[in-house]
Structure formats: structure tokens, C-alpha cells
Length: 411
Image (cartoon, rainbow, N blue to C red; front, side, top):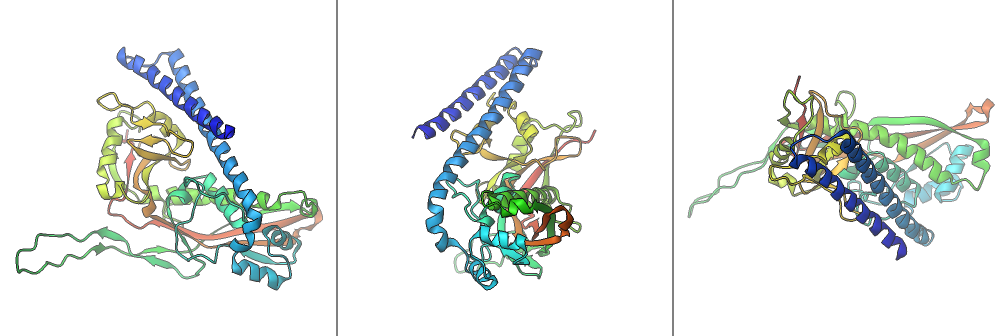
């Protein structure tokens, strides 16, 4: 209970700092002037404190959840390990727990192995660490996903399709809905069909990298091999996937959500690409009500842009930004959560620096994670080389205005 009170205290402290920051801005606004040098320094310090406390709250909350999950993991393992993993391990003559399998791969007892969740339906929304009260990862596959989500929000906000099929996956792309009309007495209903554009094709772009571990590390039973390899693989694959899913060009690679989004608002030519409160309000209302209230609706921008949002007020002097009131909730802009994404570009002329809409209309397709090893590649150095591979693709499947962007005005 004391630990949870401690987190609550951090949240309260964060909200107090935000109130102080607002007071600083309000004082300058009342005097109709910019922040002085000392005030700007104080503002930057308070912004840093807000970010630091946010990170601390998140880390502590995650630690609580991880500890609780660890208590249950051993007893639950037999129920949640996938039949495919168990059969593959049995056929290879090794144990069916993740660490034993990984050590067997690195020792060359198994040439390669695919870690996945084949016991669940092929198409589903994954539980992510961004979900309130979500369970913490205990298996190798889950820990990779956890690391991937930690480096960028795209896996947390998109619709995930798990598929190991080699063939392309085609998804109908909606461009307009059916329209209803009043039907006169004794009259028939008029036909109104939804409109579909060209199918969205999700293919298989392969992500991968090589890394090495020493023979001593492999032989040491005191090393958390699962945690090390999951963290390494998840962060490396996650950074690349998040970048592709955010700003991928769509040419021989993923088409990112920013790239595929629809233009809604263009900034003024005299602001070097920066947005105003009016720009964000216009962007918000440019998205249809349906998309603002369904799926995972919210904002996405990088940290520097979120810092700029904290200063913005509407015509009535009300701040557009509101901090999350609990450790488990996001910060809000105009009542909708803000997702910090390092791969959304900074504000600049002709730059798409902010998006808003139903982020779940973006689909990411990925298969299981495959690991392969070689003791020959760096034999002379006593290193074992392993390769991590993930086949994936992603695109926005609804281009009728589900996600829109702000772009900085040209100079």
C-alpha cells in the first residue's frame, strides 16, 4: 500500500508542477508580454521535471506489475506456452522453456527457432504495455513485444494482424460509407453501397540484424539470457518498425501513418512551421465525429512538439493540454490522449509534425520472431552470432479521413 501511495504522491507532485507552469504563463499573458529570461529558464526546468516525473511514475508502475506477474508466471507457464513451441522443442530434444530453447539455438543444437503465439487467433488486437492494467511479459515473445512497444507507440495504437503466411494480405480500403434516406410510405428503399478503393496490400518486408554473445555469457547460468536477447531484439526491431510505420514512404517499404494521413491544416508562412492553438483546434474538428469517438482516437507527435503544446491556450484562456491524473493515464490535448512518437518529424516548414484521428485504422501485419545462430561466423573470437528476423508490413486502411495531419506552412 505504501508503494502505491508513493506513486500517487508523484502524480500529485507532477500536477502541482503543471499548475505552477500554468501560473508562470498566465502571469506573462496578463502583462501581455513574452516570458523573461529567468521565466523561460524556470519554464524549461518545470518542463524537464514534468517529463522526469512521468518517466519515474511509468517505471515504478511497470515494476509493480512485473513483480506481480513474476509471482504467477511459474505456475501459469504450462497453461500459456504455445503448443507449437512445445512440440518444436520436444522434437529437437530440448526443454520447452524459453531460456533452454535459446541456449540450444546459440549452442547450435537447434539451427533456428520461431517464437510466437500460435495458439491464438491469427487476427487480433494484441494486449500491449500501454493498456491500463495490462499483464507484464513473462515469455520471450511477450518480452520482445514489450521492448518494441517501449521504443515507440505504433504497436500500442495500431491494429495488429498476426500472420506467418508468405502470400500478400489484401484488405478492402473504405473510401465512403452508405447513405440512409427517408423512405416514403409504401415506397422502396434506395440502394446506397459503401465505396471501396483499391485494396490495401500488406506484404512481407523483412527486418533483421546480427548480434553476438560470448561463449562465457552463454555458459553462465546466472545471466538473464531471455531478458538480454529479448531486450536487444525488441529494441532493434521495434525502432525500425516504429520508424517505418510512422514515416515509411510506401516505396519498397511500409507506408507510414503520417505519410498516409490526409492533409487538414496548413500553418502560417511566418511561423517557421510551428502550430498555433487555432491550428490544433481546426485539426481536431477536421476529423469526423465517428473517428474521434471510435477505436484508439488521439494525437501523435514528438516530445518537443508536446512541450510546445503545453504553452497553448484557446480564445478563452483555457489550456489545451491537460496532464494525466493517474499513473496509468496519458496526458491529454483537447480531451484526447497524446502519444509521444520520436519518429514524427519536428515542426518545420512543409513538415507533417502532428497527426490526429482514429489511430487503430492503421494496420500492422507481422509474423513470429525467428532466431538463427552460427558458431562459425566469429569462431576465432569465441563469439556466437545470432540473427533476429521479423517479416512485417503496415499501412492505413481507411483513407476517408480517419487520420489527418497538420503541416507547417512553406516559407
